[in-house]
Image 1 (cartoon, rainbow, N blue to C red):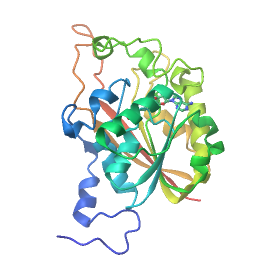
Image 2 (cartoon, rainbow, N blue to C red; image 1 turned 120 degrees about the horizontal axis):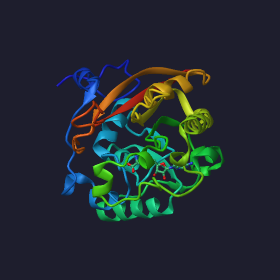
Image 3 (cartoon, rainbow, N blue to C red; image 1 turned 60 degrees about the vertical axis):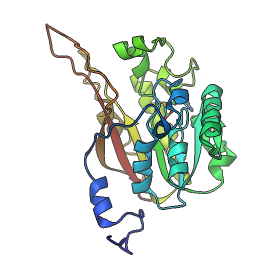
Length: 275
Ligand SMILES: C[S@@+](CC[C@H](N)C(=O)[O-])C[C@H]1O[C@@H](n2cnc3c(N)ncnc32)[C@H](O)[C@@H]1O
């Protein structure tokens, strides 16, 4: 059994565990039923709950035991569950009281002590006592992808009987209801206001998914987010990983006329705060 290098201040991983965590594509299949699904049957009330085990892998790499994590777009609490699994603490923010109730129900079912969940607008995050309480080691979040849900009239959404018009919430404050440029601007604002609460050398880890190209823009949202954040003071882009979401089905988009990509992957963008 390899020992942890005493110079490693980032995480509690050994050398071999560190190497495994560097694979650029994560292609694990996470269960959506049974004990290992972390109450997915409740969390699936949300249009895109992330597997807590996937978030736990990131939490293990970017924090040490006892670390503190902020998720300003927490949904039904995937990041909070991941932190409970990994003995880290966390604060989540989401606009939706319904998602907060769902997270509370998940905690009751899993017999977990709930982590602080602020029902509020993350554009005001600096005003929340839970955010001010102590500095974070990691900001790990999955923002609502610039009208992604509204535009994605895929079989997956039809199958689940969801409205394509109201993505996560119907609120005007929901970043998912903004247009592409408005989304980038507000995401930048949220992250810029969160940085003072992050420890130096702490990381910002963001999930995102590209949109289909249109005549006027490539719509590679992951690239546009990196570009938008390039001059945020002290925030350095460090690279990305890809999550291959094994639960996504393939659809015959474009058949039999033209190529249209099936996007079964998401980008995990990694930034470091270097004040
Ligand atoms: C992609 S989902 C996050 C899902 C989450 N990772 C999970 O596992 O449940 C994005 C979330 O951002 C929330 N949201 C959108 N705009 C917000 C805002 N201004 N402040 C706080 N939350 C917001 C939405 O309600 C939605 O639940």
